[in-house]
Length: 465
Image (cartoon, rainbow, N blue to C red; front, side, top):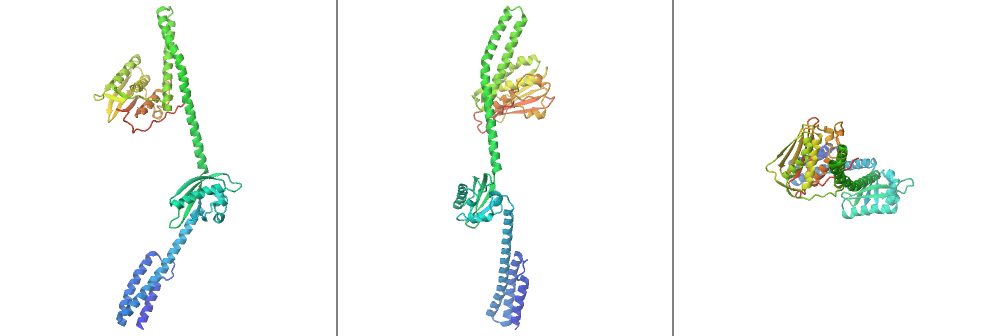
């Protein structure tokens, strides 16, 4: 009798502790229930041995107690699993029903087994119609076939597949649209989950951008071609003007009694030279922009190019009483580059410094080495450049707009040529300036331009009017 009362009490306590059908029991409580069942079984085993003296009866009692707690834990585990599954399904359905993307599930044969409510907005059909008749109920057969090809590929390979397809919905009011199909193998099951997104706007924006880019590139090529053609056409008459004005100037100096005639011929000659210089700059800029300007690298002494450039600039500097200081590092000897292009870059920087330096100013040219580069810096004591203009220097035809600079001649092509030639050598041009404190233009070129193959590609120069 005591034994039966003990068993009945144990089962009653077990039921109460487990909550039996209590819906709020959690996973940690189930684990605790297993531990409590084991503990209770041990107590039942010991109590039964004491009361009955039979080990077999004691074992059976302990097993009965543990079985009761195990069944209770199993029931609660099943309830928790069902609840979690229902919550998960509700959450996924909530997401699927409130997203603009159409979500469909397909079985191993490609048949639609689920469709979200976005089917109405995207394809113009109810989700139930998609499930019953498939994708062919919402779009042309050829479009449905292309979608099924992507789904079949995902099923066969077991990997995610993405495709962009142009479809025409069967709805009479629907317009053709582009959709992005993302097919992903369904987890732990034979089938595919497909997310269909309307990308018509993105597609049309991409096409519009491509068309605009093509038109801009075409206009740039047309402008470059025009500049190159007109420059070549101008050189022939300019050569005649320069040559004959020089001969005329010499004859008038010897024979003319009117000194103004010789002065006029000199002005014609100088103007022709200036226009020829502008034509050459235009040709260089157009070639750089078109990627057709090539450099011929060879070993040469950079010191010879520096001294030649300074000697060429001395008359213009002396006319404004500008002093040019030159310092060349002792370890700077030879470099491999295009000597003509290097002199052109250096002359443009020196001429620019001389042009913007007031009379009596000073220009300092410094040539050093840093790692595997040659560093040529031209510092002047000129008017300086505002910070908001520094970034735009080097664009063709761009000039700092101020009353002083607009009085000076120049088309704004010198720095554009320097920057383009520097990039052809896998180098760069750096500019530092402050209004009233002068400017410093630093040209950094590799000692061996042929070996500097890891540098970034040449950035084309956009011609701006």
